[in-house]
Image (cartoon, rainbow, N blue to C red):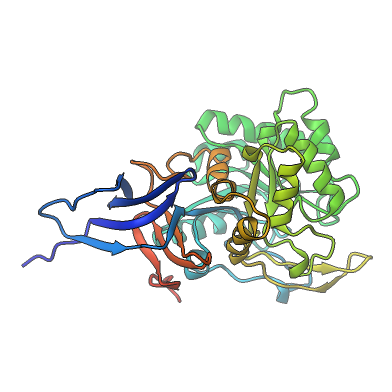
Length: 395
């Protein structure tokens, strides 16, 4: 006798924030897609169906993390400070179902090819993955020899980054060098129907976002071509990012950059979101990412590394909770910042970042205390009662 494989899962009595509040509903998963949403859904006859009652829980689109060091990062304090590769359960138990991998300071002992292989591995284990081509240095490393070709030819490459600006670890590129890479990414994105964005690491340098304003001043390269990240690392940079966003650009607040994590000059991420909204930044222009699995070096005034830690993706879940509970931001708005807005700038919406019939069955589910309870990724139950039930190959 052939045992039937469960194709349908019916989630009952759950509040859905999609990101708009749909109230208490039932949701039917068919394979890896959302098949139906409604209050009175019935079980398809003749099929094996798993039913789960989620009364008292809130279901949201799976978190989308646009800045993750999948194969590790860092090394600023020597070889022993290179962070290790990320593992599946560390991603899923943070509520993340889609992630974008990047390189950082080190484009010599780490390679875009290795990053691509890791992304494919995580996808085989159940997640949705993309990557950026490049790293801090200029010329920036690629697979094909060209940022444009990488984006056009390689399916998972959706942009370039993490390029560094206003940082003592950058290659100190000129405005023209940044502009040339931006143009390559833009055209590559156009020709492949991808985002073609530049994930721009913003450092502590005094110039901050000055060059970004100059590059986009004539309008040929729009501000939407860049995703400046770590903008909450100090007050001066944050003020610039608010002006940037009010002029049509995106601002990416890093959940792992916070006074609590050792970044003493940083603005707490949940507070940064509230300050941006209060300053008149449109909700649609704000995103949040974790810098997960990257190193968190601490430098003295001479630029010497005096400490190092590892950024956790779990900070996104914590800051999401604090946005709602401490800052008084509507849950639908907080959900939009870490799902819908990210999906739209990455050009993977509405497949990702929304809950509607036909979208991917990527769900992050919390209880009334904002504690993570369940995660589904592409229809697969990855986290149950807060614990990973699907582990990576080597976990």
